[in-house]
Length: 468
Image (cartoon, rainbow, N blue to C red; front, side, top):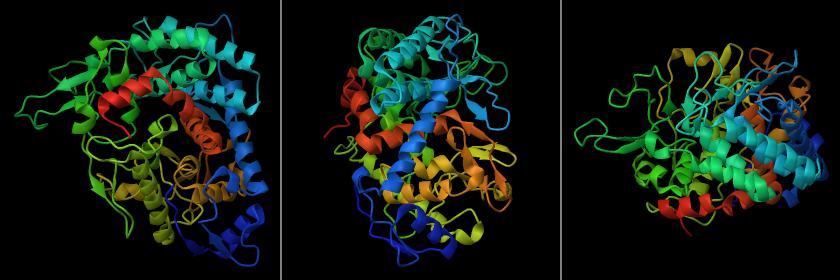
């Protein structure tokens, strides 16, 4: 861990909250951000807060899944849940993957028994195994982004067979498969081996605007005209973002006909920049903080570099620190921003949902309409950086827990905007999932441990040249 030596004089109201919750710096209003590096460094109050949030996040995945044993959608997990109505809509493929890994965490934490977890996970992967060959649920083995909770078929409206959501589903399934073993691991391997990652690779003519580079498409939708040469394929993963997990799994598949090589990984745009006096890092187009987190929930990059010399673990440390520092430097822009309220990420806001939330440096130049969403803070953003910025993330957790409007049945609600006095009434499944998995990794490394022992992780990283 790169230790950050930083002490900040916070506003009295926020400092009082942090001091009261954590017991640190009791004789002053100064918050120290170099007091936590490991789980063992937490005070009793901080440890309890983390354990509470982990348990409540687990409860979302355990209680809101389809548990009807006669349903074709058994085990599918909803995309979101509403605090006021308790209602759920369609299932999210990625949330289901996060949920399967979270069930392994729940067993490890003692929330449920091994037998209970194994039965739920096996039923879910059997559902996915059966749905994968249905053209209304998957295309070339790649699942649609959203599935009907009851039927398991593609939900109505805008929807696509998504390579990244399928990658996150597979990563979660694989983690659970390694944890439980036996029939679960066997079924996961069957699902994994059916995914034709190579089908989604775009090759470009040397004289095209892509300069002959090779990319992986974001997915398939029958009415898409994004690529005239490959009808139905969507836009490409041409910038660095959350998709490194996709490259690892697509390179690691046991089916050589469906495998991709290293080119999409090394040929994606890798722009580097910095905020203030911080270190340079590779940033994404909107630079939402989640893009620096999702792959790391499963992949332990510590001590590795790729063939171009990039340390992807340190890259996310530096990105998280930049996100935190930008919020500090821009506190005057919003009441929501502070030393303990940071980590801008794709999120619900008072007007709906926005994928634009993020911090510089980034590839996108915000337009005037960005001011409508800018004061929104997604609670997941800071929390899920906990393995990169433990002190900053834990202090954010304590602050968020002090806000009554953010407390919900499944832990912290999704987002808030203090300028508008707006608080989300929804939680989003992937937000709960990344928080739970990162908290588990910070606590004892469980999720990374089991994913990293899989043949997919070992083979994929070796083929991409990500080595010690």
